[in-house]
Image 1: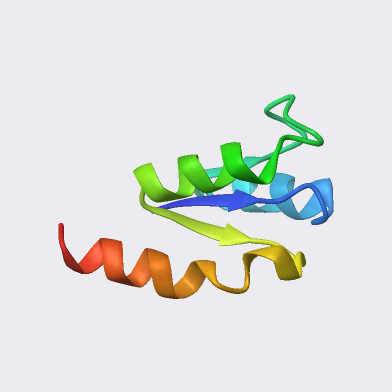
Image 2: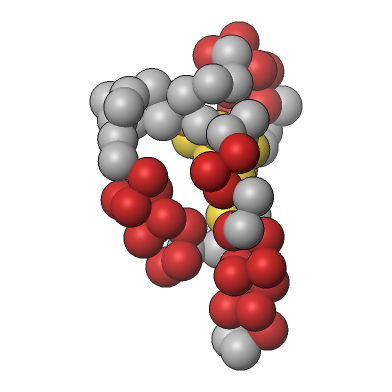
Amino acid sequence: MKILLDENFPLPLYHRLLQAGRDAEHVIALGKRGMPDSELRQRLASEELVFLTNDTEFEDLAAECRAGSRER
């Protein structure tokens, strides 16, 4: 499963994940720094991702994602 790191996670962590053979992306490495939350939520709803963030705006996301993954 792909790991998506929000821009508030350090890039060195992203690089370590890649070096360890993990399928990972970082918002900054994608050129999406400052992307709207709505765009990010849309991606999270459409893909199976592990999303790492420190933003409290996404606290409700876990319930949404769990519900969506059960239906697949």
